[in-house]
Image 1: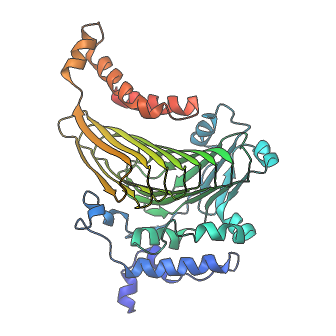
Image 2: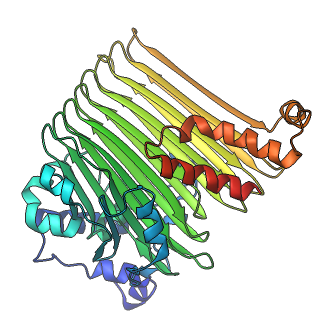
Image 3: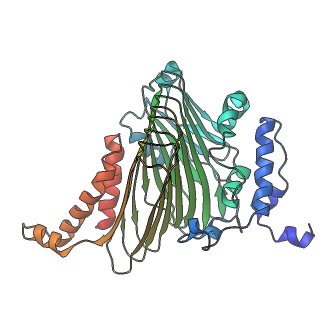
Length: 439
């Protein structure tokens, strides 16, 4: 490569060019990072001719003009204390914050340790338990080098969190993980790996916070989950990033026999946000409940892309995404249900509902089915509507002011998703945020 070409690279891309194996991490991990680095530089970013990016802008997630984040989280930050306090038991649960190589433990996790539950910084886990992590990391659930955005994540990632629940263990308390974005002009690539062995159970919360409100920053995140046979996991993700922060998150889960996965995603912040969700039901009796709620304002743009992949008989999935869009914001949804030829008795549902709260707001929706079995029940639906004058008139006729009536309608609309958040304090936080912005 010529000197001129190198000079055209962003600071973070120059560091990727110079990437070398880390002697403190497993050889297989370093090899994967180098492979992903090469894919990042060799693969073209998709454009709108790619069906998966018909509504999105893949180039928003390039590493142009960015550097690796250097800012450190503040141990006494009120934002961290508030998030840990959402549990109602801030001194007892596991609540950790991560940015780059630094991890801050904000509360104790003695009960989880006694139960044998592991909550550990990813880099530490790779150094100490590399061979335990390897089969999950290289399982093929996520392809590290198939597209440049994911390749950029895998090339950059050197930290995140590893959560492991042993066979037959029910985590006695929830786990809260805080993933912070960096300062303006920076990129972070957090990776969360959650593994539940057979008959294990847990509640995990991932909070995406930080980032700039004035200049572009970027977060390339990945949340990967493996559920053993009969396992139960409730995974709640709350994204509240800076209003000039672009964010790409891939959520992927592989669900074992008779295992159940419940995913709740809450999106409030960010500028250009894309959330991809892929649920693989690979064994008989697996179940997935997939919920999301979002509130967009200003010129925010959200793109959701989901895949309910039924690869075994007698599996069930249910998806419900709901959002409210105001000002000149825009949301889009693309969802696919696939059923393999041998996946008989599949029961799958997919719905996307959007409320438009201003004349300039916009929502696009494209639900799809790809069915190769003949004994299944698969349905999908999509609605986009305004707050109706009939509903407003009904509430106003009973003495409610118009704006109060409007907020009540939106609150009821969101409740069908928010009510699935297990912790009441977290549920109230989501409700209150939307109601405050509507005022």
